[in-house]
Length: 393
Ligand code: SOE
Image (cartoon, rainbow, N blue to C red; front, side, top):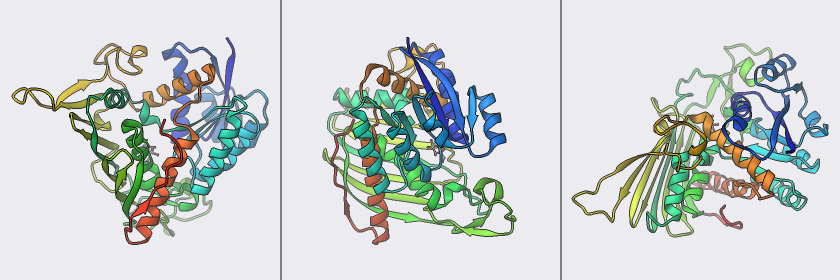
């Protein structure tokens, strides 16, 4: 068996959960490759060394370029703020490394186009790349996709997708990188809406063809935070401008005939990570809420009306997607498992030579929709067509 040697860039929230997933994946799944956590990269020497030690990385680097140069690394996993995705991914692909890149793929459409072109040309040399839309790997959502594909829901007519959080509801919450366009690209739209756009296409096989959108920034100035914004020497009293959306809503048409509504906000008090999706089809409906992530609600519209009703499917049977590797029925999974399942799929794809999904082209599709949302919102919610060039995978 050969070994896949991994270099991870970033040690924030995403770096930590990716590390956890890399540590766990070969214990949970029987993989065709051995995995080695070769190096972790981050700018602050003390922090990156400490993180590397506690999260199982064999070495630490203070410049991501070292990971690209090192010939003992086969795969680069990118968990930095969006502003760095393009440079790291292009350098890694050019050096012949496989790439896993956190979502959204890039901060702009032009960057996503360059990354996709580079990934497609690297693929011809057997180099694999994937975007980290981890929620696809939630067993209950994978099950929903299978049910749609099997025709159990009939023709899909509505997609209703919401992603609600509340962590910046307090106006004194500091101006962290996620609130600055130059680092994050956009706000709730790219951070949360990107997941919904990806999931809607993943679940239904239908891509968005046009949309009308509205975005809002409710709090446009916040205290600068030296530690979280990277602005050394800044006092708490100083404030800076929030340059991203706090919330985005849009309605859309889909290529297969469905209509869809989307809401992404960080201003829904009490909603911590409420990612909800409902699909309504001619033969039935499914509904999912990440805050109860092991469950899928299913309504069979072909059942006798006196017995019809939403059923709660506990997606923890060994026959459910990914569950054979995990715990006995009823012993549910958590947020971290979506990442572990994601690493499993990537490793299997690399070992088999199959292109992993979601591909950079799938990430580019999401970026086109994000771009259309911003264009529509800037022009007073004017209808914005979305041109689709790739197939959904
Ligand atoms: C922060 O809002 C965040 O961590 C997102 O960046 C993730 O993609 C989402 O899974 C949870 O919330």
